[in-house]
View 1 (tube, rainbow, N blue to C red):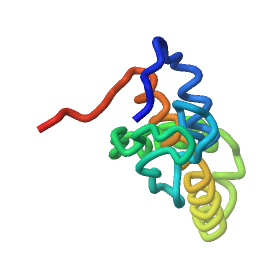
View 2: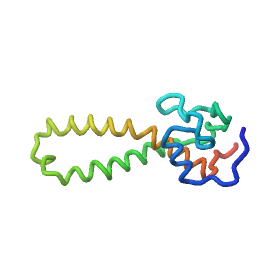
View 3: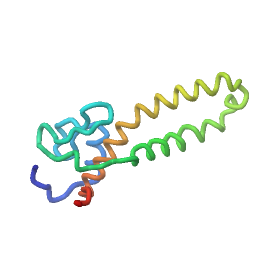
View 4: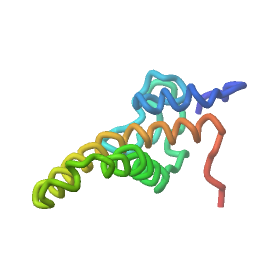
Length: 124
C-alpha cells in the first residue's frame, strides 16, 4: 500500500473519479469493467477495493436525472400533446441511455469523495 498524502482535496478526488482514474495517483484505471472497481491500482498499488460505494452512486444518478431531466420535461407542451405510445418508449430509451452513461462516472466521483475523506470500511 502507498503512503498516505498529508491532504486529500475533495475536488481532486471527485475529478479523478469522474475520469475513471485512481483517486490516489490519477494514472491507474479505477474500473476493470463497466462498474467493477479494480482491487488495487496497477500504478501506485493503492487499495481501491477498500472504498465501498454500495448503492450511493445509483441513488445520486437517479436523483440527478430525475431532477435535471425528468421534472423539467413536464413543462414542455409536447409531453402532453404527443401520444403516450411515442413519449413512453422515447423517454425510456433516452433515460436508460443517460443513466447508463452517467452511472460509472458518478460511481467514480463517489469513490473519489470517499478517498478524499479517508473513508475506509470498519474492520470486524
